[in-house]
Length: 280
Image 1 (cartoon, rainbow, N blue to C red):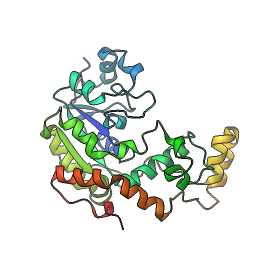
Image 2: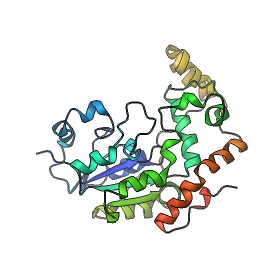
Image 3: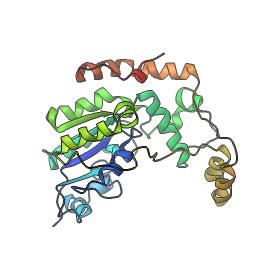
């Protein structure tokens, strides 16, 4: 018999959730579907009802823990999002009041840059636009509806969940510390949180997922001439990568945008921010 999940990896987007889900799927006590379900954040899926959601966990009967990963869930209010429900956290609490929530956070400036790269890589934004223009210039309207800036309001969004769920139901991890620098320790935190065997040896800790293919030739072909994409993918391995990095003034602008949110976040968590979160 299928059952509802015990835990959710709710985001944030571009903060290591795909890596974390790939690790947990290795654990013999854990069952997770292979894909994101988007039940609580997409109106078309939520309207299908809880029975539709439960069917995604049909293979979980013999596992101690059942979970799913949909990083858009962290965008609790869906402010400015196309087709994104506005009360994601309330929908989750209505159906899963005792669920455990795992949140991964990355420096919101780096996260915003990663989000734009993802939009370019997946063909939703033209690779011909400069990163500076998209993040802080005349092309920023092209990012509307994707949550590039909104999802970085970590204090606001985490507080929305803490207003409904108990503090011990939420585990907050930091991408820089718990995934990049000390992945074994990060996974031990997750195992302890889920009450599963923390002696299990995970493989592929250093693997990179959702890598950004930055060869501009390939990205342009994918966006404008998709029939040429296979050829340019091969050529792209022989050509230097375009870095798609914003300039220093834009980075400082983004640091200013998130300064107050970050201050309140670390006051809430009663800890110092990772060093890489500090503006230079």
